[in-house]
Structure formats: C-alpha cells, structure tokens
Image 1 (cartoon, rainbow, N blue to C red):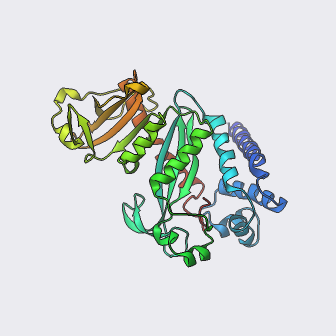
Image 2: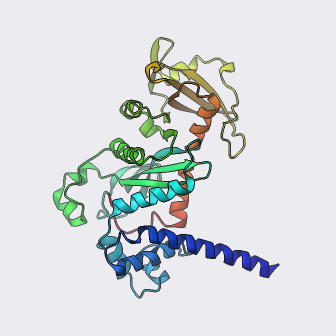
Image 3: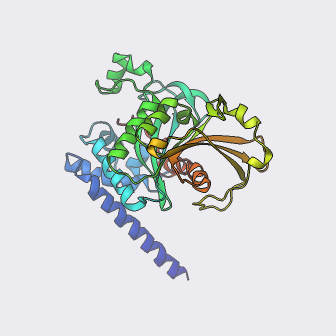
Length: 353
C-alpha cells in the first residue's frame, strides 16, 4: 500500500513538473537573455515549492543559488515584456478553464501591508486585508472563473496621487515616466477591455460593492452590452415603482413572502444559508436587456443582508442571477491560494503595469 501511494505521488509530481515545464516554454521566449529564461524556470519551481517565506533570499536558496542577487536581478532589471507574459498566461487560463456557459470575469482588489515608504504605490490607504486604513500597497485584479476552476488573468498596481505627482519619488522607485494617475475604476475598465478584446469567454462581469456602487462603471458595462451582477451598498439609489430611493428604503417595504430560498443554477457547494428577493428595475428593451435588484439575507440572521444590481439578457432566470452573484467568491479563494501557496504578498519589488 505504501509503495502504491508512493507511485501515485510520483506520478502526480511528474505531471506537475511536466505542466510547469510546458508553461515555461510558453513564456520563456519573452525573456531576452538565456540566463533570465533559465532563472525564471527555476524561480517558478521555487514559487511552487515548500518555501515558508517566498522572498528573494529564500527563493534563491530554494533554487540552489548562493545569494539573492540573481533572483532580484530577474525581478528588477531583466529585460522581459510583462504585458506579453500577462497575455500568454491569460491564454493559458482560457485554454484550461474557458467555458462559454459558466465563465465569468471577477473584479476585486487586495492590499499588501508594508512597513516602509519605498515600495511602489505604498501609502496610508484603506484595504480590506486589514479592515482599516493602513500603510500598504493596493492591487486591482481580474480573475476568471468557470465550473472548471478559477485563476487570475490580469492585475494593476494602484498608484495614489501622492506617487503620480512626485517625480523624484517615482524616479527613485523606477516608475516609468508615462504612467499617469488612474483611479481603481479606470484600472478595472482597462483590464476588462483587454479581456473583451482577447475574446475571453465570459457571460457575466461581477464585482464587489466598491466597483458596483459606481454608476459610471455600470454604465460603462451597459454601453458595451456586457451583463453584470455587482454588489452595491444599501445607500445606492435605484428607481423602483416609479420612485427613486435608497435600496434600504425600498427593502423596508418588502413583504415577507418576497424572500425565498433559491438553489442557484450552478451550485457547486450545495445550498447556502441565504434567502433571496429579486425585483425588476428599469429595462433596456432596445438591447434586449433587463435590470434587477437582488437582496440576499441570512436564514440565521435576517438583518444580515447583501445587495446586488444586475443587468443581463431578457429571459435570465432568478436561479442564474443568484448563481452569478455567489460565484464572485471564487476570487477570494484565488487571493487565499496566491498568498498562501506562491507568496503573492511576500514579494520585494513593485508590480509591473
């Protein structure tokens, strides 16, 4: 039995190594020098290895180098096209996870807590990572999820105005001159535009309330006829029954029978302890689209509620809307795995943009 288990483990490791080698072949040509191509191969293996702290020193040790200079040179100064590698990896994700029926694009952000002031984009700013205003960097991410799995396909480092308006600080940190200030909504739109242009097979765009509360962001998606289901705060105003009020005011008038348990059309984890109400908002008949307000409440605590605004094709079922809303949580799993397995918050250089 032990021998059989060892054979299974060996086969799994062999398959993992072969897959990583194929991935390296896909992106290796983006690195100008053979030394960098070889080092990036070892670096990828190191990231996926059992290294507790995945910074320059520890990764250098893991790949058999005497000091971190080579790894740091790879990340800081080696010539490679970060945008092209991003596109290669997006294609890789689509090849393995792409699905026309269940694919969604998820916009979200995460923070990276820092102690100093030198890391690119670091500032005192709010991050959900700490649940408060902290000294940190903030990255905006785009993930792809389907019934086959989930993975990141794009990223952008948010640069506060304190950085974009300080030439000396930018120069010292190596921020390219052409980088201008863009708010997080604009960063998200640029990433989505790249995914749309690349033909990523996604039926819906989903996002948390920071992005969903933006009328401009929702309008940007509607202009492109891109269905969405985004979280919104209860203070968002929506027109309902001929009157535009805050969501919380509309919800106060809902009868008890407006809520019911809904089993999502795509339910990978069984029933959730939620009840849902779905209300029709203003339609967009010229485009064959409709708008909805969804209210989610806990079956254990009726005051625990979440709110979503959605825009999608006529004929979309409540079950599909609920499933799309719940699928947003796949991005949280992506963040947890990226930070826990490959040290996304252990790095010591700025994100390329």
